[in-house]
Image 1 (tube, one colour):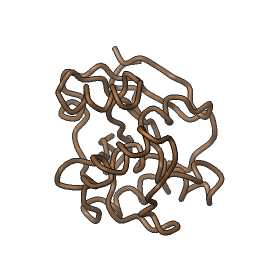
Image 2 (spheres, rainbow, N blue to C red):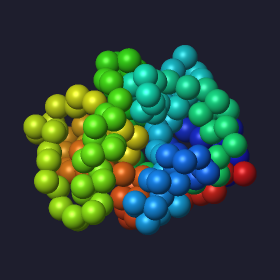
Image 3 (spheres, rainbow, N blue to C red):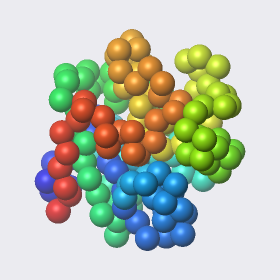
Length: 169
């Protein structure tokens, strides 16, 4: 798949060699350490992703950088206009979930059960990458997909049978 073929609703999974990426890959036992979600605004496809500054929109080339990318395209029909609007309305409203990434995800990986659940239902507070993509699909499907969105990671998105996989050229 070419960059120009990325469209609303595609989830991008990233493989990088930075220290944090390698740590996530080691804990997750998965080559993918980051996830983002494509959306369209003003006829331009952008990438929504959880970063240190919170939930941001980035240009595709900036987001991808030199990472190896796997594109996950939903096998089910999505309302692209609703997804675009939902993502745009959430940009800048949620901080990054450092505690969730460093503590909760580590505990989950070490003990394979959810000890702490900061989600408190359907409310999104602070985001990390896989959780954001799953949350969008959870909300837009009225809870049909990703009902445990607050646990989702790049690995769980990768392993989901809801998506076709395409390597980005």
